[in-house]
Length: 110
Image (cartoon, rainbow, N blue to C red; front, top):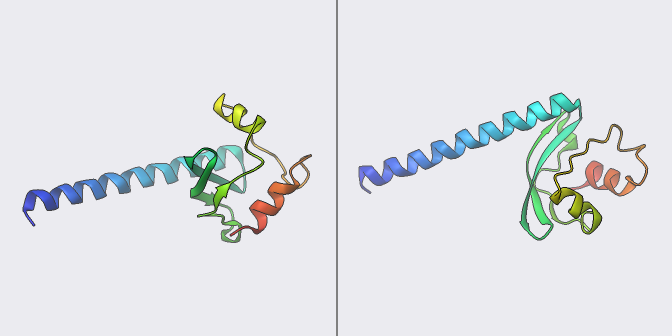
């Protein structure tokens, strides 16, 4: 392997690590501002299907990192709101009307 090719690989790895650190720090800051137990980055790889690719937590037992799949609750109305740029924080998911499906999904998944 030539020195240039090896340097190219090292440069790509370094850029990826810097990006990952930036994402993790940003997600942590979001969680701090929102004063929440969790903040996640959900990567969509198909129409409303994706995976939790990064998270910051108040307690490791809350982890849903790697959770995948379509979310039936996200289709339709919620998808349209998301596409329009809607952002929402729920103060207490266990007392929020209509959030029972998320309590199960986020407290016990994976």
